[in-house]
Amino acid sequence: MKKEAVIAIKELLATPKKIAIVPHRSPDGDAMGSTLALYHFLLKENHTPVVISPNDFPNFLAWLPGAENVLIYENDKEHCSAKLQEAELVFLLDFNALHRTGEMEQVLNKLNAPMVMIDHHQKPDGFATYTYSDTAFGSTCEMLYNFISFLDKTALIDKTIASCIYTGIVTDSGSFRFPSTTGTTHRVVADLIDKGINNSEIHNLLFDNNSYNRLQLLGRALQSMKVLPEYKTSYIVLSQKDLDEFHYEKGDTEGIVNYGLTIKGIHFAAIFIEHREENIIKISFRSQGTFDVNQFARDHFNGGGHINAAGGKSYDNMKDTLKKFENLISKISI
Ligand code: 5GP
Ligand code: MN
Image (cartoon, protein in one colour):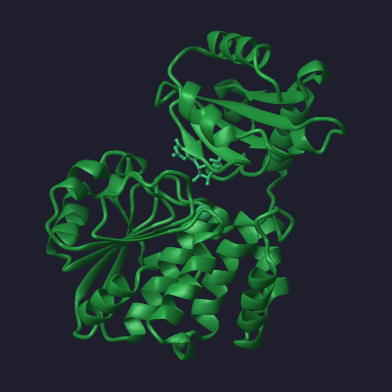
């Protein structure tokens, strides 16, 4: 982050302020972890922060300290809009294009308060007043740890803040196995453990909280997997009927796409999930090696993300979406 930006933000934070903190729509562990870590940090600094999420967060993140105070824009647009309008400073975490907040974009666009963006996705669109953007980082939470250190406030990181930061690092790094995990990542985590987090318990809360229905849905997903060895590609399909049958809850499909990549010789995996209410097919892409799924999602499926992990959506029906996908991959080299 530029020195001038740090100085300006320090000045803004020198007096108590009403501060809104916003994650992207359908927030994941990194979005929730970073916004709540910042929330607790700002509370300690005598500000009045509020986390406003565009829509609800998955159940497996409900244990995060402060999650009960998160406002959900979709559930109370008037109150959330008022909170955004009265904010004297706005933090936007784990996304870099305003449309990632869905409908909230219209409210955010009209705000006059200075905005700080902290994010690790490709191609920031430059809407914020101050930007800390670096695609080399595996998570926004690791960047938030740095951000707190830029403010010379690392000493304020307590067990609560550390638990939130750890959650984002562990979820976005696939439990420290993705290539973006560095020595520094581990050194940050070492410090978080020294601050008293219970890393083993956090793991349990995040990953060993399956419902029977979720595992059955996973079974259905794996059964649906199609493998195209000639294109080093595999994909999974879940229809709305599948979701209904296993009483889908937010978060139930998290991580399923990764199974496709565990097949020997497969370098590109996708999952297509029908969301009939929104009339879209939600897609996740994962790759191993140099195939850039961020670019693929941007070019063909209204999305984006990182080189090895991206998401997107299709407004066609499932049959046409899959036809388009198969056609595309037959023409590119993976
Ligand atoms: P997931 O497949 O887990 O939803 O997302 C993978 C990565 O791509 C995450 O970092 C997520 O923030 C990003 N991503 C998912 N959907 C979109 C999208 O529609 N647009 C952009 N720019 N990024 C996305
Ligand atoms: Mn992230």
